[in-house]
Length: 215
Image (cartoon, rainbow, N blue to C red; front, side, top):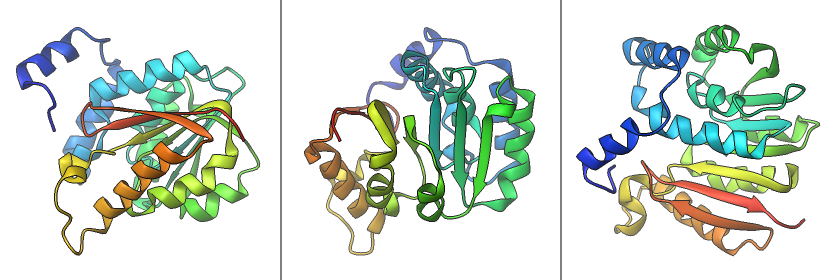
């Protein structure tokens, strides 16, 4: 989904930070071998995730929705040397693919994979986080927020992907479209919850940045 003309979007990408070689390899292999490669964060959004993480310099990062590991590696670029990145995905078939690229990176020993239902896994993580990224099944976005908000440190950042959902958030909702309904609920939740301050960035499919300001 383009919010500016495609030629101008290409200019933006060209004049932003280059995509690291390892992530180029990951992207190529994802498109060659994995279903729905469009789910990949990609060059531009990946560089945005990277620079946000570098600005936050988080000790611990939580990612909900790993896919092939591209966004996890981008987020890991800003992590403290003693920090950990915990990433959760329900697709067992992608575990080895993710691990291969994690171990090729400088952050392999800091990245911990969790397989299963994030709503069951997160309460068992005995950690709090400075940076959380949600990019999983849209129907559960409100549920994910409710389970992670107490694990996000004061001053911590919550990033939420796909919040504009190809523009469906401003279109009439189809009766069986549970994902759009959930995203509408989620966007309202982020706007109205007094524990956070929120800004939606109209880039790609929409990315929300929320900062926790109080318990």
